[in-house]
Image 1 (cartoon, rainbow, N blue to C red):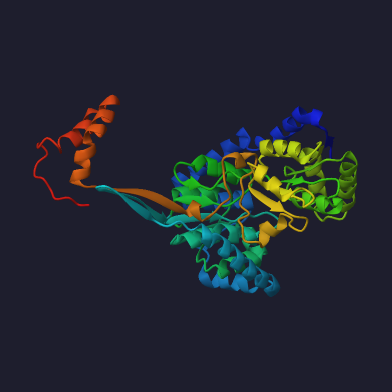
Image 2: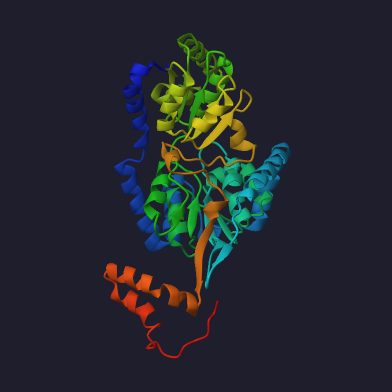
Length: 437
């Protein structure tokens, strides 16, 4: 079911993983471009047409925006026990993210004052994915950092079918006091947020995961608006030794494999016999999973157990993979964390499966996938803030430094730049003003 690799199989292992990177086909991209152009030119009419064609749901323009009373009614149908646990998760997520909040600052240097203003984005769109499952945790992870940052307008889009089937989504939105909710999904929802329609006002940034069409749409509108990331299928890497519990390892690998047939679950161990035990546990546990078929295909497509001589060798491979989730079992020294350069989130200890981060610990579960942890970070409050530099120069400071500026400007062939500082020193710039610093 799942292959076991040795050190000599390194090239084969990475070649197999590379196939996961090209998940947005040219055909998908072409369809998405037509959808975006349709929404850009036809607005609500296109949204309603695509919702009918792609989701099989006919709506009117008045039904696109969810009324507050409809949101409350839908939320009331959610399981109170689940809502109670959501409230606990909200507390933890808020506590974690409020520590990320950046503040404005400035410093004085002779006759200059330099600083940075930190302000929240004004308009953010959040995509809550559809499908057969409901993802209230996605609601929390994308909205709470934006609220902590102080974003005044948060617009949520979600497929109408999913919203009506799963009242827990409405409950999560209600708990977070979100009032701007639109029942539209897919690439057309992304296009509406980016371009604006008669009903949906455009935003400045779009966040939230989705299928290949949603990912392709986010890629297409990037530049017109900002986006969080192009999220790919989920992935976990487990770093263990022969003494690590194979049952726990298998369970954690399957927690990713059940997501998607393109998800990836990989374990590194220092024992061939241990690798066999892990594979046996995978076979036993997958048989009882409700999403057994998906998990099996995931393990067959992109799962692996890799046998190395020690954890140092394994970390070399892990840094190249740059996984979304990395679990390190406690039989590996905790100092191994310091050797990991590239990972979206690191979970240490036998009792720290990545599911605790998905739902409850408080850290964000929106993480870089597909190796992008080499240069990307988890979603956070900083994704909903922007920075503006502020510079104040006195007449005296410009007098002290103008020749340096003039020299550098002329070295770049920008004469007007040079003159803009020189004229202030040569008396041909008009009436002199008083120092403003």
